[in-house]
Amino acid sequence: MNFLIADTFQKSLGRLTADEQAAVKQAAFDFQLNPKNPGFSYEGLKRAKDKNMWAFRASGDLRIIVHRTPATFTLCYVDHHDKAYDWAERRRIETHPVTGAAQIV
Image 1 (cartoon, one colour):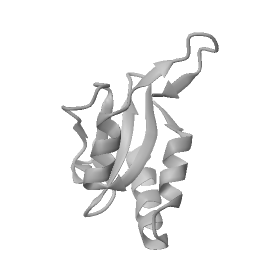
Image 2 (image 1 turned 90 degrees about the horizontal axis):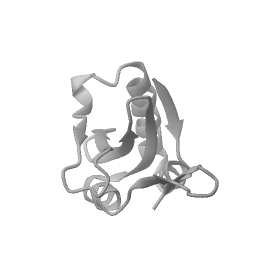
Image 3 (image 1 turned 180 degrees about the vertical axis):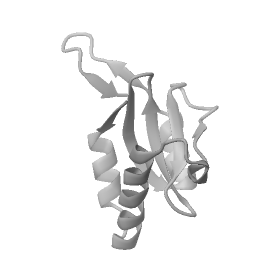
């Protein structure tokens, strides 16, 4: 399984406090080691436009948004619960028609 980090994840991480960033970084590392750990409360987002959008718990209120395919997990965004879910429900990942690069729209 490949783990990728989107620019949107890095930007959203930078907006958190230092303590929140530390919790997110630890959760992201632990997720790479064992994404099936039940403590993550890993779940698909039912109202998302992109059915490959999932979320997992980084701390009590922080959620990491992940785009999941059979070959990759892409860390897309992190924020407090409601803001993270709102972000994920409005976006999807598509392949750019000219460059073939993945893009979040």
